[in-house]
Image 1 (cartoon, helix red, strand yellow):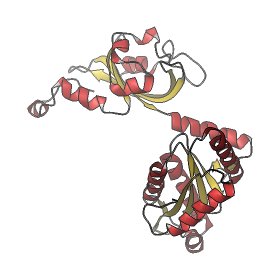
Image 2 (cartoon, rainbow, N blue to C red):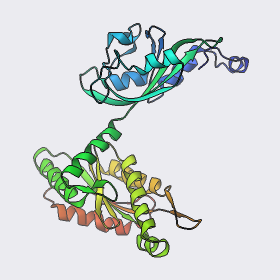
Image 3 (cartoon, rainbow, N blue to C red):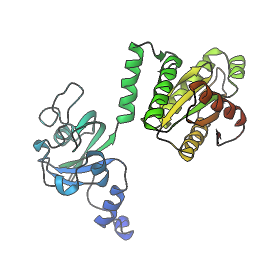
Image 4 (cartoon, rainbow, N blue to C red):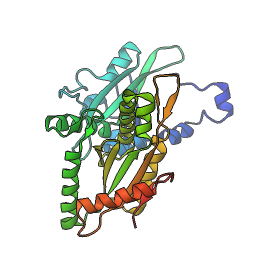
Length: 312
């Protein structure tokens, strides 16, 4: 990474440091710069949001001060051994790692880090830039998958929770709703034309359709939501702390993003996927069966509707 602007950049005003600060502060990722001694020179707003530390608490400190206490999955303290920043400064190469930082409030936060050296105009390494992003959803998904597999709650085709686990989760959510009034809703999701995919392209394509739909649904749901395979070509999502508008937004997002998913067939064609979604908010005194039935009715009403369906 070079540090001096070109003439065209100067003409466009891109040489103004304020421009870069504003740009970096609008990133959701954390970004910070260090010099060769790993002294922190810059700390963006994304870094504050992910760690709880404000720039004035961090800038001027050194990585060796171990404020963030980076460790790997084995507990190795990276600021003392195996630091990606040190490696990038020493060898001038890009380094990536999955690590755990310590939030200001004490919890461990899984992050993906990418480190790139900063070079002067003569090519010498003067420091490094680290970009780190929250890996909580992905880490939690991997953790849940391993736990589900141990407890026979995993659907092995899609690697999602199976119906048994979903039924238990709904009962738990209903019990919490009765006691604490914590609102939740469900999305019943049906993969459209699934029988036609199996009949026209073979069961291997049908399996891939289910697998790719499952990956898409997992990626677009919130970390606290549960999405699993309800059976056959149906999925079920359980979303906590939602109202009608939020649940409708999740239903619409599911439809839109799955419709952008394609799988290859056994010939040259690609198969476009689509789903029907029915959404239902829990009601006082309602059973799990009644809740699912309402979502099922809305799912069939929603066919052809781009935004899915929602109960009153």
